[in-house]
Image 1 (cartoon, rainbow, N blue to C red):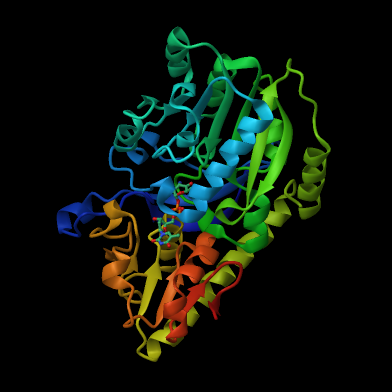
Image 2 (tube, rainbow, N blue to C red):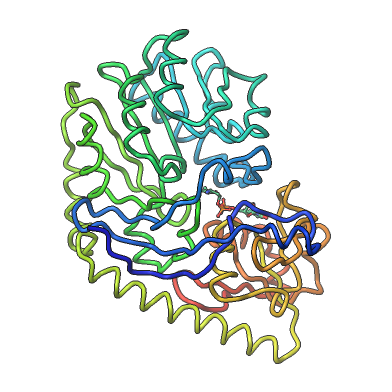
Length: 395
Ligand code: DWN
């Protein structure tokens, strides 16, 4: 049974950066109700009513996975580690974005799946790219021209696909007998521990735990045999999954992480009710802090036009009433407006200068990278604000 625990209000699509805020474009802005629920049987946490992927993953998809130094390095390390552990002949990535992971392998060994046409366009001349949604039909099409795959990788994508049944059945079809599926996604335990409620938005249809993945993949003759904690995006889990019939055995590391999740109460609805109370408190504290700063006539901006900040801005009703603008290094976000609250987005070159007193860390998951990069700002008295794990001024 699915039970709702968190209501983050009316939200726009996190990728819907607006080119203009004319009456016409505001009228066509799409909103949905962001309710988050917990399945008491499978322990899966999900957005109650997922948005149609066809309106999310278009040829205007803004996020570039290679935009941060941290992620470029993380994908390179992951590629080397997986190559060493599994020695795959063929690697396929579901949700390959701009190719930041696959570029670490020899061209001939990789297949990229990317439904956002503008992203698929970036990789199509570098390696074999299918500009399609992942499903059984596509798995059959690929199998007509290729042998079965021995390593399937998917970072921050499986959690985005509403139809898990179709997804895992298609994976089962194409995975070789001893092949491995490796999935990475923000972990539910990290979100609960650091109160990062902004990991809930339309694209994050699911927030996985090892407990839930273990339950779900079983339904499709797959086995979760290992799991690894990684620091990406504020704390993620990397799941290792194989066919039931293959040689892999469940690791001690997996058993320990499942025990930790049970201790944290990820199999108990009360944990999520408590979490929701903390989320409401965080909202109040953030709004109060911004009001206090604003009263002193200080200039506040937001740093990183993240999809996560769409949730924070719309849930806390933060717009140009608080932020002068948002800065972001991604070229195709610059000159646009944030979804729902319509804050202008500028390049850091234009907007991140000595006129700024405070910068809200929209990209809090890159805090270390940003604080290192922005030493000059801090030295000259500039301050960062964060809401993760607690609302505070970062000194
Ligand atoms: O799952 C998803 C994650 C992985 O990426 C997607 N559904 C969409 C996207 O979510 P996000 O926007 O919350 O992700 P990031 O990676 O936290 O976005 C960081 C943003 O901040 C990028 O637009 C780049 C920008 N940035 C910046 O302007 N200056 C980042 C850094 C490190 C910087 O110094």
